[in-house]
Amino acid sequence: MRKIHVLTQKESLNPERLSGCTAVVIDVLYATSTIVTALHHGARAVIPVLHREDALQTAAAYRETEYLLCGESGGYTLDQFVNPDPLELATAGIHGKTIIFSSTNGTVALKKAATARTVYASSLLNGHAVADHIRRSSEEGSIVIICAGSNGRFALEDMLGAGYLIQELTHHNPDDWQLSDGAFAARKLFASCADRLSDTLLQTETGRFLEKLGGVEGILHAAQAGTLPVVPLMHGEALMPEKTANKSH
Amino acid sequence: MRKIHVLTQKESLNPERLSGCTAVVIDVLYATSTIVTALHHGARAVIPVLHREDALQTAAAYRETEYLLCGESGGYTLDQFVNPDPLELATAGIHGKTIIFSSTNGTVALKKAATARTVYASSLLNGHAVADHIRRSSEEGSIVIICAGSNGRFALEDMLGAGYLIQELTHHNPDDWQLSDGAFAARKLFASCADRLSDTLLQTETGRFLEKLGGVEGILHAAQAGTLPVVPLMHGEALMPEKTANKSH
Image (tube, rainbow over all chains, first blue to last red; front, side):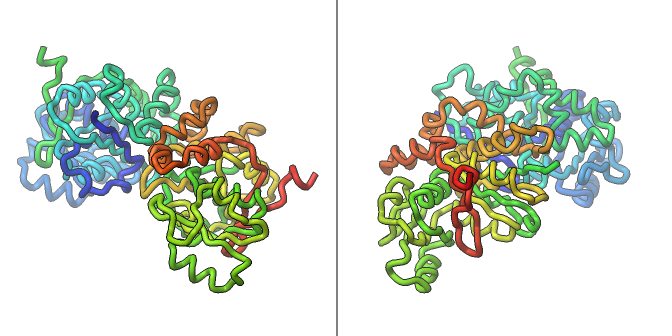
């Protein structure tokens, strides 16, 4: 029986306790939705970094045609970077490129999770595909779902992303899984909001903030549960798309 | 419009941000359920402390007949202290006495919340009474509900206690309140579990742990939402029962 934990914000994560675990990082608005969308639209890889300087330092190892800088801080696009709204990034000429990506919460959580045996990025868009990949893998040990949260606080959209993943993980063989309190709550919250995800995301604290910045289309995109069969898996410092069942069969 | 925040665990609390706020601390299994039950059964006051040594130091200011030491660490009763199971404490000869109380999560959260303008202790037992008192008070500013959580992690029973309080605060005048993501989630979780609180509490991580220690009766007691009209309010370092509407009319 595999145990599923949910951390409601990245600040609760103790990296030392992740060894041997499968980690799944979720930042629905937008970091992980953006990563999933970028890989779906042909980006070669996404490298999460901590901040602007980290991004510039990472970029120094690449030729100018190979990479693209993307990032925000506190919701505002970094100077000379592409805005990490998933739809904007997808149309920024990313095919075959490595995206070097800095964000306030999501990429910080991904860096912090690097001590886990395996690290996935998930969102509402691809939770079904990540769940399918985890269920087919031979890994044992706990699954730790890390909601990025918002500056040390609970963010509803990330709990909904966790709940969707847990629903997809557990509904085939419910007795194979043991849920922590956080995992139980996330699945229950997703079930109670599943029929109105767009409205719910628009009403979250981050959703209201992004709407003011003109991000409604990105929010509606991020709310489309189960639409992108992408499994972003960390290889070294980069997330790359794993072959999914949909593609390989 | 007053804003309601929920912190999912005491570790997320920044005491500096509480000034001018109304804080409500919730630790359903058991610290705040125990405090409410003790005050309902005639304890004069409850002084939350951080640990055993702190309790002994606090006790030195009292005569032996005036106080009673109560506490646990990691779920295990402290040596020569009364076990803080609410039903055990209620029958330990507490009438008129000051309970000096140390626990792993709840009393630590209460001490940490002391920078707020007003500090209440709430639980499923008395959430209706605390909500009523807050609605009648002339205070403004945000209401910050601090779930004690369990050693830095989300505890479902505390979110249910928060959700009950928020339901009771908001159902009369829903437009008077602005809910944070955490407050929205807590209210939704309470609504989806309200018809089976006993079973839900027994299945939480803390519930299963306490059941192994023989605490089923205490858990079933703590699950009885809306049964005790007690409003524990912090005066200096001690929680004392505030006059409630039920008593004063």
